[in-house]
Image 1: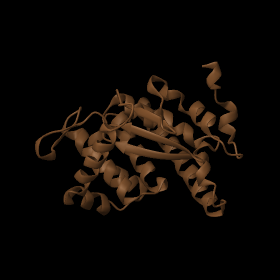
Image 2: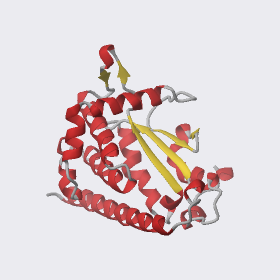
Image 3: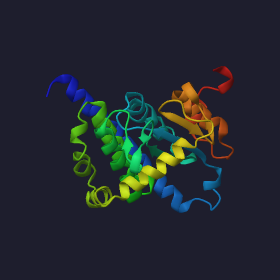
Length: 227
């Protein structure tokens, strides 16, 4: 393994460890949180496609910011893996980056279905997208072993046709966005699309948050008035 590969692997493992620790912390805090805590959360919807370079970069390089400074504790993060795909005859799906993208979109949809909690599906999605980032997307199945996950629910979902049904649901949701999405990733905070400013999502989350438990990440975020 050359030095660049070692650095890449180290960064991936560091990010994965950070998000896993943060997700465990959030899961623990939810167990002791007040009943109305969730109502104060800011929704963050990410419409993306698995092999799109901009989508991959956003998930691997930018979304990791959610797990710094306690920001994830005030966010309801939701993934919609469909993007710019198109529905054809007999409900066939054609993906922008080819059949492999359709495969991974469906696999990630199945992961969301199999492990609905963020603690279950986000580490898997992050792992798969990190493999895409390193141009090793054909090795996506190694993520099951890396994360200690049972692959059967995802395989069963994919092979049974449930995965395609999930993708058709995501297609309907994506195609009915108002305003319509123009590209991916299409990042939406509390119902408002961020357009080309999606990398600045932290500032929009902090501005939208109305609760009293403001995470430290928000004190470091840029004010929207200064952008």
